[in-house]
View: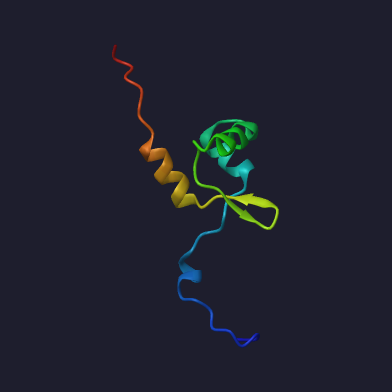
Length: 74
């Protein structure tokens, strides 16, 4: 290791963090909606990296799976 610190084994298995623009495109909503959800505490879990917001794909998918589906048969 160049800096002398061991690299955690889980780092290799992790996927990249997603930007709000990527998540908005994935969910089909405007980026502004993600910011509103963050403010209201109702959207997918978001992490601050410095001054930037980032999402973990697995947390977005978990949040999406937990959403109540609409009953369109009524």
